[in-house]
Image (cartoon, rainbow, N blue to C red; front, side, top):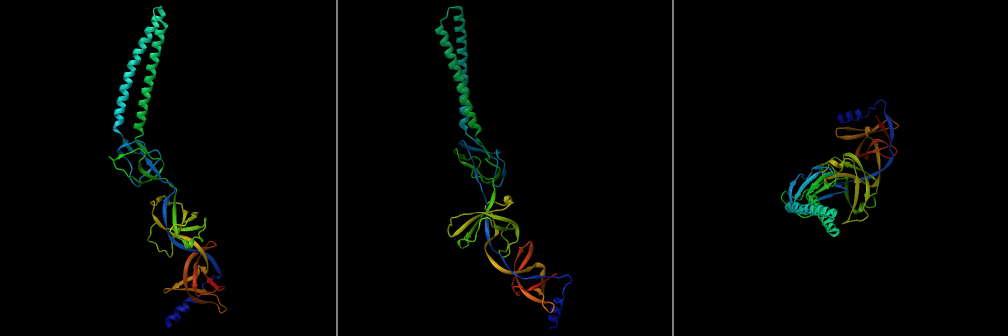
Length: 329
C-alpha cells in the first residue's frame, strides 16, 4: 500500500513549463497491413535472330546489363560453308569478268582499225557488263551471309536486370527463341486485397511501405518510405481486387519479392494525445489530466501511433474522454 502511494505521489508531481492539450475526436485512415509483390513494369526477352548452337553465354541470372551489350553468341556451322562457297563463286565470276574485259578491249581495237564490226563490239560490251553485274551480285550475297553471321551475337535489348537465362552453352536453338529475360523497370508493388475493401481503395491514396523483409509485425508497421496508389484495376479476380503502388528505391529488391505494405481501407474516429504526454511506470502507461484541483494521473491503454498536423500522436483506447485537458511537458 505504501509503495502504491509513493508511485501515485511521484506521478502527481507536475513538471515546470507544462502545457495543456485538449483531447478531441480525430478521424484517421484505417490502415491494413498486406503483402505487396515487387514487379517490373516491362520485361523484355532477348531473342536469337538466327538458329544454331550457343557457343558463348556471357550473363547469368541477376546480372545487370546495358542496352546493346553482347550477352550470348550463336554459331551456325553452315554459315562458314556458305561463306566459302560465296568466295569461290566470286573468284569464278571475277575470272569471267577479266576475260570479258580482254574481249572488250580487243573488239574496241579491231573496230578502231576498221577490221571489226559494230555487232562484235556491242556483244563484247554486253558480256562485260553482265560479268560486272554478276560480280556485284555475288558480293552482295556474301554480304548477306556475313550479316547473318554477325546476327549470331545476341545483344541486350534494354538496360536492366537479367531475370532468367533458359539456355546453356551448347544448346541448339531456333530463330526467335529466348536467350534471356531482362527487366528494365520501372519497378512497382502489386497488391492483392480482399473484395470487401474494393470500395475503400482510392487511386492517389498514400501508403506506407515497411522495411525490406517479411519478419515484421503486421500490427505496427515500421514505415521506411511512402508510396502512392497509381492504379486500381476494375476487374475483381477470385474475390480479390488488384492495385499498383509506386515507391521510390525498389531497384534493390528482387523481382517478385514480397514486402509489407500498410494501405488505407477506410476511416475511423479516435482519441489521441501527443506522444510526450504519455509516461510509463512499471509497465503501466499514464496520462496526466488537468482538473480543478490541479491534476490527476490516469492509467490508459495505448493504440496505434500516427502523425497529425506534422506532430506525432498516440491513440488512446481507454482512460480519456472527448474534451479532457491533458498536461504535456
